[in-house]
Length: 457
Image (cartoon, rainbow, N blue to C red; front, side, top):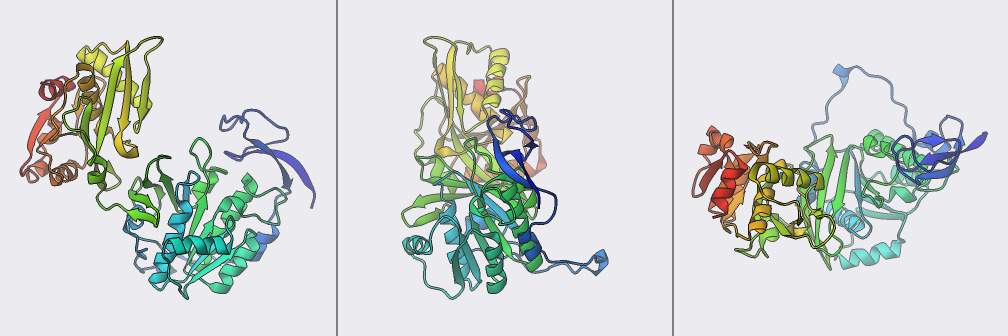
């Protein structure tokens, strides 16, 4: 078969006959690599593993009524939407050293204990290295746990057909290659082809498959964007480099809610589940400190209390800095502008730093009210009461807008001992909130000016 040389973008898969510095499709710089391109057609490996199915009528299809398979790891089950769906393909991505392989191995150990046949395919570690890590995780010998060190997709497919496991873990897809494609492992064509073959196997043989993927320096999954479209579920494993906490975040799930999270703590014996993350993230909070406030955020279906810290100090030289860790920096700039315009705070010459304690990242707009209160608290050097929690979205006119899942947010705050909650006035009229009123004091506000007058006395 005649081949030719093309240059492919490793981010989006765009192909060009010559090298380009900037990709015209995704605008990434220096992302083109040279690849051998074959004429369109099926590769040898694809022909070997493809299973031909005849068309059927919709009415003849009998839905699978089997319940989700519990993994034995509650936080992972939560992120997956309640458990593993048979025949599903899940992509697990994260930074190097974050714990992807550890979580994958713990998943295999847990499933094997539950009498499920599991195959762990490693292309990065030898069998003996995996055994050493399994011993560290205190894994017991099992007749249901199979290991193989292989990178050739055809041989991996043969192993899956021979063993016929219920679950397969591929660690990682960036080192798996197909002999039918002349380019090296990890390139766009290789990742796309191998993932397609694995997905075809999972759907045809009704095998639940987990694929471990690498990420780029920008935090995106390495390889073509189509990789995320092929799979059923995408999980990001997040965490600060020097923090012991790890967050498993769902960004795509065809069988459950998205933006669900599971929280883990990295220990010497592996990843430990954190059932009550709110208490962990607030355990080291310094009370009666200016610039500190607790907000109630919703991650998926789980309410989490987190501490937002703000530091406002006079800019000594140059332009004032705006730095955010844990929230969107563009959202921070917007809220600062609202404070200057609607409240009259002179923040133009102030350095402003925002941090969410514990390494959490909050995208919930209900945290806006907590951010503006913490900035004003640090600017005026007035502490916010330690028993108060803030919930509310801030509009451009300085109004405090209603939020969803308010009852769940308040219930979590009350469980952890908070006595007062400042919330949008529009939510205060909700009938569902009346039944949730117990021991907490509710402070409804319509604008951020009212909120400042109440909290910063």
